[in-house]
Length: 282
Image (cartoon, rainbow, N blue to C red; front, side, top):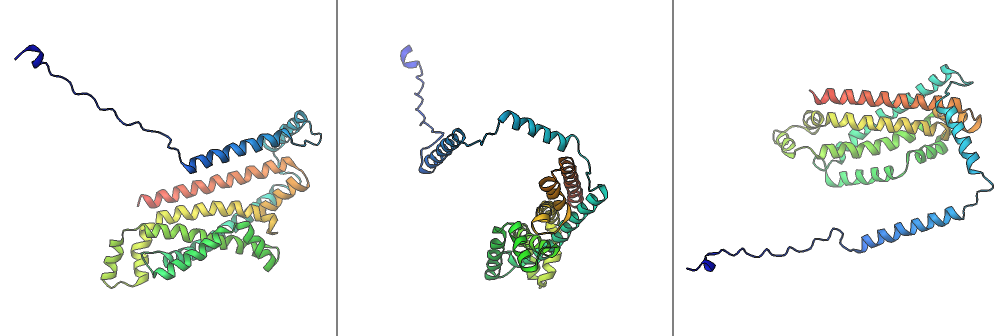
């Protein structure tokens, strides 16, 4: 055997196919076209914008002055701290009440809408109805009920509760459908009744998720309670904010109200985290 024959020849490495990170497709092309169109429209609008004699430097200076009054010099204004605290309490109570209503009816409808618990036709009907209700914003529901019931707290309660029920029904039903079906089937085999299964198997399993979704909706309802305060004539801190900012132009009071709202939001988030940790640690 010659030396040349004893030399092992290394096999040639096959060329790997090229991997294209961005495949050309109709959807990708449409996204690029739409994005480019928006950029062109925005550029054209900015270059042909009628400023009506507004001086940018003066406008920016006035904006900074207003922001300074709102966030660096806040005070209770002419309304006073007691009135603002009372209005804030009204908004908090409104959000809590509508969240409780939404949680009770939402859990009931979620049980009836869950695919692993009830009749498929009943569940589908409930899900469709709740989807329609969710599609309409809360503020629209509040305005609808303000026409039916007149301006006031009743319209705000009905509007917030209506949307809360639909929102929590979807959230709770998804948590219920995520439960292992073997647990439910084993209870059905033993002859356990429907509501026994719900409170013995379903409720202990989803309680942490139930708390999380409920407090998320509470925060949403608090924000909505502020919005409908003026729109539906429900009063509360939303009405005070509307008067201070849009009517009396008291930016000091506006900033003070904003800080009050932010503080309540942080408190609600803190309570939600603590309660959820409590249930998760059990």
